[in-house]
Length: 212
Image (tube, rainbow, N blue to C red; front, top):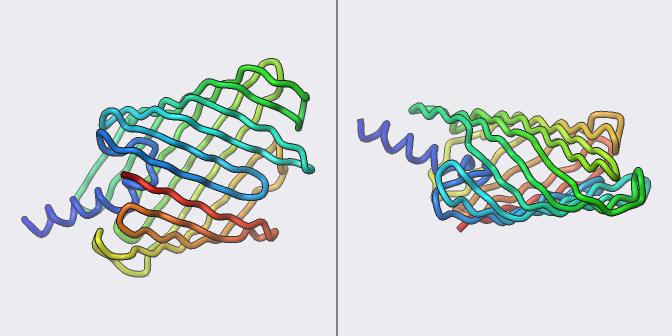
């Protein structure tokens, strides 16, 4: 029984804590996700085990033109299921702010974000699906969908380095008509997570996340 309890606690404190839009009450997450076609920078604070709020900046690049979006975020944990060997989550995402557009109409106006994130993982397997919708009636609309699947070659305790091999598929129809596939490596040590990779078309990726 104690072994099973320890395994469940370890799972809850593993990469799931780092990569989710809502973590434990009082936790703060600083993250930066970067490719040449987009970037996503966030500062989030979980004021309960179900709600998180913070600031979010996005950049989308097409043909050397940028659209930038600054948002106030609100994330909600809709559903969670924990077992001895796995965890599954569904989150709802929202935001409001300003969009400075160059890609479609060159203007600055109010913008809104909506979306969801869902994932399922064990100590060695990981799957996730994310969708974001950005709307600005006076400028343009943007969408992004990401799906990931990955595995870890070995189980590691929370205090040790954790390594993951992953494949990410991303679709941004307003930026790139084709699906972008990116093999990547994920590493997680204590409260720091970092990822790097290169898409099949040669686009680099570098991500960093810290929680405290």
